[in-house]
Image 1: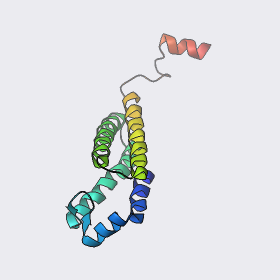
Image 2: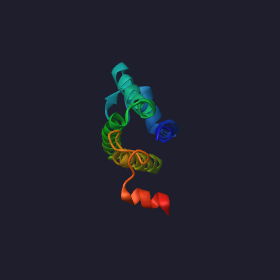
Image 3: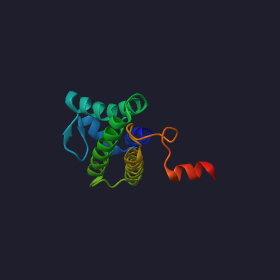
Length: 134
């Protein structure tokens, strides 16, 4: 998802409206001034998914599940919102796949087993035992 994120933004610099907006110090079509605050917010927006990778590797299952569900849904909503009114197909295609990947993250997080659930080795159910035996 982050690669798509980055490349969609990098490809934007081939667009005259983006270059001209940057030269004027504004985000084209959004009416947002490019300032310290804007760049800080944009950096934070990209840092969150990077940190989610680390949390997924180091955090407990219950925390991962909650954070991945919340963050993936918030980012999906933000990407859809930022795509409204966009006319460039490459941007819409990239946004579509970002959302698809975020929904896959949410689905995966939803189905993650929690730590309090018994493991297969510790307490197999009858169905699991039959699968193991046959």
